[in-house]
Length: 313
Ligand code: AMP
Image (cartoon, rainbow, N blue to C red):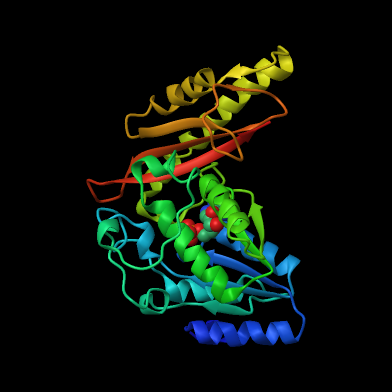
């Protein structure tokens, strides 16, 4: 770990507080990028933006147990800390990442954490209204876990700005609501989705896919783009005042269903700020078209969930 030893690695809440204290004394702005590791260019784009916009940048790497249900992939979630530190120390040569917070589980959950919600004790944060739909339907405890860990992290780091990816569109809405409702004095910045050259949204979970399946999974973005093309054709070419959501959804579903390897969990057209289901999309008002699609994992009988979204305007 010679290369990565240039970055300051902070392992405790106390160490982060001391680091932050120094930046306050120096009157420096701090950008914060929370991640679960297995870093890819999507994460790096958030880090690059933080470096650009702030005096100091801190990244956290923590696979947060409380957002995983007991049957989900917590134990198998890719953990590549050495590689992640290598990426963070080599990728940003001109102005480096200043610190990486890599807490142990016991640092973030001093009283321990069980995955069964009914057995959990202590303080958890629920953002009602934006957590239950879309991803929340099949992952009912997911955003409670995300909101809880992000609240803890924001309280620890107290950043000027925090960076999230549009790839996780619902997460961005949940976090915006959380920060607003709990009056957290941090600016939330949302960055565009970074994609592989074939259009597949970059994701740590793509590591579960074979090379062939990664190629095939580009069908998800191609399908979303077909939905967008339909919307653009109807509104810009045919000057329709609105397009029914079900037409957009079936345009997307039709393409994905052509490949039997993929199983659609949902395709939804939602209000970009409230995530309310929209019956129709009007130009100017906008909508987020999101989907979750299951694809077979490499060397396994299991499926992994891939999510993606596109904004209509
Ligand atoms: P994760 O490690 O998956 O929790 O992601 C950490 C942050 O990186 C989240 O804000 C994600 O939305 C963001 N992110 C993940 N994939 C991408 C991507 N392909 N493009 C942009 N941001 C991303």
